[in-house]
Amino acid sequence: MCAQTCCSRRWYAVNTHPNRECFAADQLENQNFQAFVPKQQKTVRHARKTVKRIASFFPGYLFVSLDLQTDRWRSVNGTFGVRSLVMQGERPLPTPHGMVENLRSLVDESGFVRPPQDLKPGDAIRITNGPFAETLGNIDRLDGKNRVRVLLQMLHGRIPVVIEREYIVKRFEQRQFDS
Image (cartoon, rainbow, N blue to C red; front, side):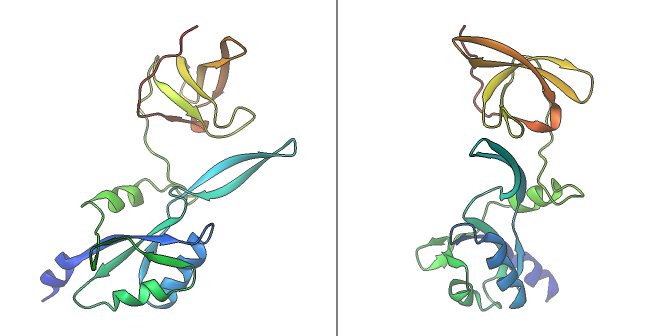
């Protein structure tokens, strides 16, 4: 019996109200559902101040583990902070096999998703923290194990900046900036 129950349990995406992912996850856990909100640390610039904030990796979404045969999954839609389960017709749409499990394995000791990165010169990157947060560039060279020299496209040229490796993420499309 357990083998069948384990096989029918899947992860489902839940659309939440804006900035209510953690609140909705707490409400779901109060109902004995297993919820997962992938988080990241993000630098936000406002009024000449730079502040680090905890943000959802997928703004407006969280994941919930459900067995559609045994769980009262319709109650998820009535949970405070939740807009609705992501549906396919009349049934919730499961996430691809292994996607949430892979995300959960990338969570570090501080609770943030840290994708492994095999960086090399020429890779297209985005800076996530610091004064150049959300700036796009390309890796020029790797300086030791914790620092990276990045070429940023700004001021009609390419400006070299040395930055901590943990503050960059590899972009999926590989685009070189022209000088």
